[in-house]
Amino acid sequence: MRLALDQAHNAWLVGEVPVGAVLMRQGQVIATGYNRPITTHDPTAHAEIVALRHAAQLLGNYRLPECELFVTLEPCAMCAMAMMHARLKRVVFAAPDPKTGVAGSVLNLFGERQLNHHTCIQGGVLAEPAARLLRQFFAERREAARQRREQRRAAAARPDEPSIPVGDASPLDFSPKDFPSL
Image (cartoon, rainbow, N blue to C red; front, side, top):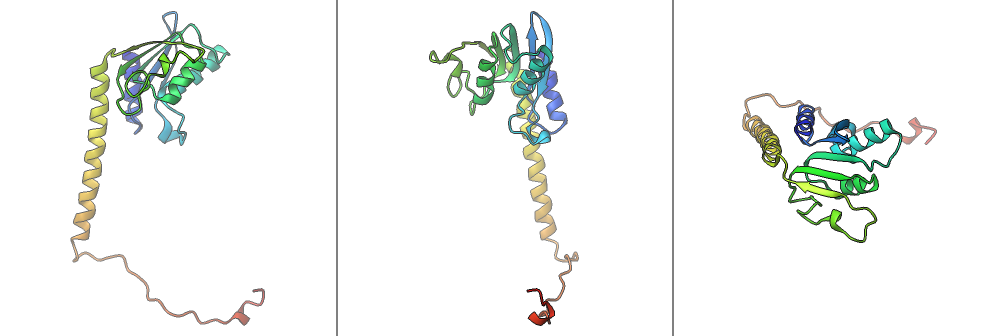
């Protein structure tokens, strides 16, 4: 999970929500990933999906039955289903996600008996450092947004500064005969 936390820091460094993932097989790191939806303009580029794609390419198979995924935030529905389609043996997550988590917080997709694969789930591993990282990230984001609002208000309150010049509007002087093709 510490490697996944390092990946989460990488996400933060590039302006992404700090979530990181590490995929392992028999104690060996196979692939890593961190959130990239903003930088790649890809809504599916969550840390887990990035790691799963990389591992599938490296191993030459979309099925990863002997693999375990460690992720810093409880998986969303998209990621959970990808993990089940990959036939992961186990998923370990750090912090719960009360808004979109589907390993028990909002619902438990992994516990659905009707699904044809059942992945072992473990939550709460290094939950506090992962949750603290997310809280710090969002606090920083809120503070930056507050500062931008204050700067806009301050700029609007200074009438002595020159405003952006606006040109005079004048009627256009042309007739349809000036454009024979119309």
